[in-house]
Image (tube, rainbow, N blue to C red; front, side, top):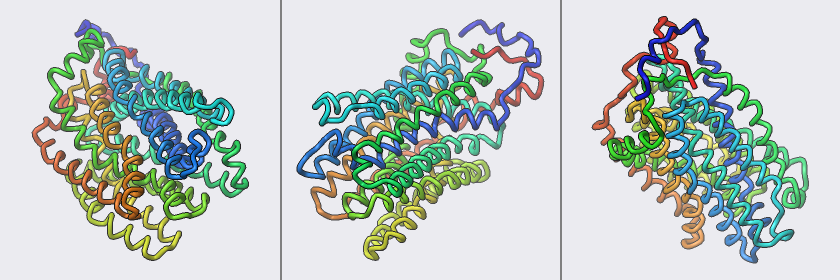
Length: 451
């Protein structure tokens, strides 16, 4: 450990993070992350034509969503390195770094030449951009979520963490809004020729604002809680907490594949159902809006009734209703019902996700909390979330059944629920039984200076 005497220095009245400032700081980065992901998912069909031209539209879409999944490969590396960095040097510097990397990846995609312009180099550069986005996303979630939880007071940690999920849906709302505007105001050929670049270039604008706000934050990781080096952080988490990592990874399976279900909704509506771009973008906008609100409801409920109780109940309801609702929607062949059905299912899913985001951080002690949580989450996202859209497309292509892919989601949700049962054997809140950083400051308890 670093010198514990550092913790005895007077506080000198330095300001602490109020909840509003904490939430805004976390919201900007997470919203930007999922804005980028939402934009790519929403324009997956167009990107397939631009970077992977093929006589078979399914082949172009499959390559496009596979490239989307490539970004998830870098998430575990980002989670491990940036998570260890956050546990050694602080949550604040890690959050500042990840938001700059997000802007870099988004800007690259927006400025890339197409396949017609530079040939095979175009998809290669697209893959590199997605790897940068994936690396930054892997580091962003762990540090931002940990920061939210550690800044919150007892009895409010579920609500604080749920802003992480809510902000992801804010990014989806923004991506859906941009998609709707482009689809309704521009002719279809303009989208494929140049307008697909606009959403990615917009993503760059969030970085300066997010960097400024995060730079002004106060660190929540006290000096006496830090291990000596990043290598010590990594060796500790993988030697002493590998069971918790694997268990928490499996808990995320249902949530990750379910999230991919909603991200895939736009491509599904266009490629499989033959709906216009504007209708498909409305799905993205609707599920994002619903998710913003109901994720916070899930967080509030988790503080009142318990995280695991709310997560299990909401996820089980989602599993039981998913196939019947989708079957009814497709049998009615109504775009309005399709949009409404996705919104209804998203409400249930968001309650589960808003409650569930705080499960894994509580399974790790403070000194390795970020890297432990981020690694387990990133592995779940990579193995299950990142491959889901490609699996959906392949299943539909192989079976010819428009609902066959739903069964895969149901199976993954059951795996997550079974894994959640065993989380009871993981200590509920190691390191969170103490007062939060904000509570310490309010009570006049001396804390170490932040990074």
